[in-house]
Image (cartoon, rainbow, N blue to C red; front, side, top):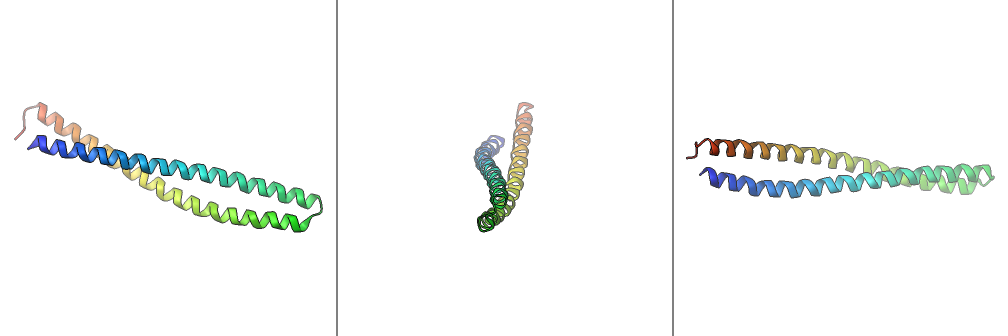
Length: 115
């Protein structure tokens, strides 16, 4: 019976590992997108300032409008990242719990308490 339970938990462990890796990859992808978005916002701010210095208010306004669109996207990305980060942490906790359970059951099995 203990062997069957260990087999089932090891199967679950494989699924949790795969899911945890997928969630972590999503978290990393979102972080890269956030970084790119922040760089784009900085770039548009610089362009806007240079346009103002050159006396082109219309062009500066255009850059600021684009910056606002990117700022909105940044907010969405940050919210998505927070969710992915929380899910990643939850998956890590599940993985740690499964590993601890497996270790405990294998210890019990080694001690000869199998039913």
